[in-house]
Length: 428
View (cartoon, rainbow, N blue to C red):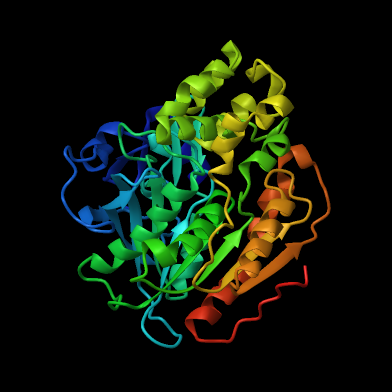
């Protein structure tokens, strides 16, 4: 019955809420315009200060009839800092759990970095939590897969603030995909913003941890190593970085020919947003097909990018051999700026990576952990040995997110409960 109703909803453009006489549009950009338009000029304040907040509908699927997340949702916009050190604003969602925290001390906060959602504003997790499943004609489709972990975490009493990152959701700014500084700042300032929200159960100065997989793993890793210099005021107890894209230059050949080759377009668009002086160089290396790729993915969510560009090779998008291009100092330098592992995290970090990950290389995640260990950080590195299977379909990148998720959640809970860590530097 639900499937019949849902197919009818797609045809009419509306889906029912819990009340039969209340209707919710599948997607209406006007609904989000006021909240997601950054104020001009930006208000004075410190990174993490709240710009605005409002109640947020939280559903697992569009109708809201098949269950909801066990938390009260609040959509937020807060001040942060871009990759150049300039003030910007970032949006996100705060989840206040219905359940009490059963562990030690005050209720803990997890700042959650979502995995790749896309580059269009409609892909922002804070918008998708209102919809459960996002759809707009004709291939603009999205399932907020992060809700699987969020629903579990809040049921266990963790408070969460999931950031959208810079430019994802906010109107007029391109999402700075996998920019380590921008993402790290967004995560750290999300922790500050959550504790400024009125009416929550969070305590001032309470414990905070960072969580993320894939793009989110890179964001959590960046936050971990930037915390000491950017946000020494935060009480950080640990970070989970799953499959972090720690070296984008190494990732390029892995993306070639894969289902998610289109994310290279996200990355190049993000570089041009953060470093506009690099735009002429990047565009000089693109063929007409490359220009078309960047223009199209800029407004897409990940499902549409996958369907339209999967299994393509990178070379036709560039006018010189990829190997030579990546060896050019100016071009390679743009990617090297995003390398994670150059600073020492000020709290324990768990790093997970699949040795046979076909998209985000194990070797780069492993090197990041080694670099941190050499700086004296408390690091536990875990290798998933899921064997190769349909690698270009990136199955060995997606499945470990689920396989490693529960052990990682237990590791995070241990940090909040004061359990001693088990670093394994020098053994992997």
